[in-house]
Length: 149
Image (tube, rainbow, N blue to C red; front, top):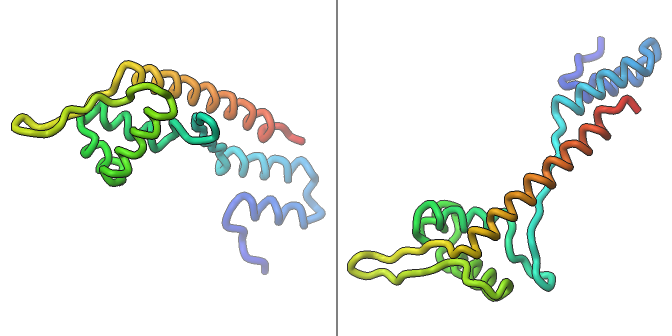
């Protein structure tokens, strides 16, 4: 007795080997496997002269600065060092020629940071781009993997 397949992919392979099943059965099992387990993922980022300006990490840093009003807290929230966060901000500012974060040094009342209007606009446009790309990829994925061919 042959062991039972433990997932739909193995079941599809089992059906392919078994001559008493017709191809439409294989297609149905493989289709279920694609639909139930496979998902498309993508990662986009913006560059200037081949150098990164904004991607998921820098996006999370800027969102954290907006939320916490602090570079240090934003950095801790995404598990990077304060120094690395400053490097990200500096490189974004150099590559875009725009101020991304307004900083206030600490002191008696504490410091703080807030996003510039340019940074907010960049985030807004990047989010819109990301949603559009993901929607397009989801549609293409469904078209390719939902077909019976």
